[in-house]
Amino acid sequence: MEGIYLVNYSMKGIKSLDEEVSLSFYKKTLTSNPHDFQNYNIKGIYGINGSGKSAIITSVKIFKNLIINKDYLNNPLIQSQLRELINKKLMRTDFSADYFARLEKKSYLFHYEISVSNREKSGRIVIDREKLSYRTASSRQENMKLLFEVNNGKIEFSDQIKQDFCEYISDKTKNLLKTATVSSFLIDYLLDWKDKKVDGSIFGGLLMLFLFGLSMYVYMDQTDDHADYFIDEIMAGLDQETDSKALNSIQKAIHDVKKLRVNEISISRGNIPKKNYAKYQERVSRLFDFISIFKRDLKGIEIDKKENKNYYICDLIMDYNEYKINVEFESTGIKKLIKLYEFFDEMASGNIVFVDELDSNLHDVYLCALLEYLMEHGKGQLCFTTHNIGPMDVLKRNKKSIDFLSVNHKIYPWTKNGNYSPANLYKSGMIEGSPFNIDSIDFISAFDAEEGDGE
Image (cartoon, rainbow, N blue to C red; front, top):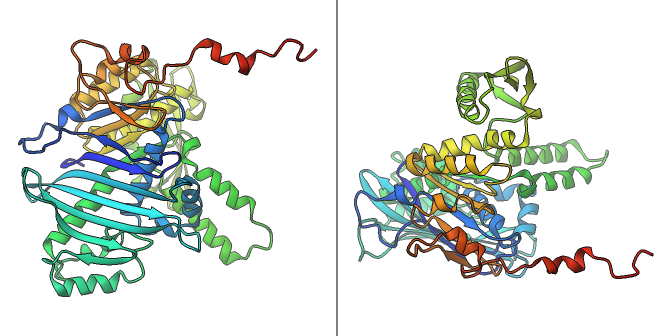
């Protein structure tokens, strides 16, 4: 979504991350106009296994859903998920973000904070605190102005907000703001804001927050998504005596969790509403243009569709002239590219995209070429985790583009230093927090049996 740009993102309290991790995506000041976002549009996060890279991406996914989905914390599967994901020592997760937005030809810097915790006696995950403030983006001296703050479910507004509106919102949100954010709950009311005499600054601020949430797209392999694990756990606990009302509730929860995943082109079978089929055909056509760059012998992608009431059940068939195969039986690398295509497309069109393990199953040449294109032509932002040092020489052309995550979960941003290569410095252990301190002899105890063992 052009016009919205993530400036800073911080979090703590997901998985093993019990100290704050902060990612900076832009220079310290926003005073230049026009803003130089193109040279700050990509970031790669490097770190060894277990350093917390996936935890960062997981946190962004939770953050997004808190902003836009008022039913998120009311889903029992999500509750089970979060109880496992929230850091066991802190029993809470804190998120904050600074983001730039253009509103009515003016530019603003917004600061948003939200905290969720697992400290209720009931064991439910609830929202402890939420806060939104802003200032003019071009100002260096202006202090942040509070729009609203929520503490323990009670909302408070800036003194400048009209009293009748404050009372109206307080009444509408009574006993609800522990399980839903202000933006996710009130967007339904604010769409009709003129009739309700909503304060303009509140409307603009909440709308920009909601659009900021919508503009974020998060890709994770399903093994790191964890949703399937909890779905299986719930289904395994069902028995023949489960009443139909409870079963319907569980099925709805499962359906809602699956809807939270980005509506990507399916690598196997997709249920496409008939009214959306023409758009689906267009997406598949563009997908072919993308995949044929890597598979020169691919002649087309056909859609094998079967009617099912108001839907088409669609399979994608890869056409190589002499033979055709279902996309399910394509190589792992091609299936990964198919999954990622829509995320790349979202970044190219102006949205904020996070991808975990971008290099998994992708060749260096493909990866570097894609990154070069997105750096030069992408209208949005891309932040990804990776182990592959190959793209470093591409990334170093941009600013704020390489972060190193150490084994103790500290971020060390790459700073250009003459003609030194970040890849060479990283491999040689010259980057602070570098993981390359393992030698071949460290594996002796893991693989070499002591003399006499097994005899």
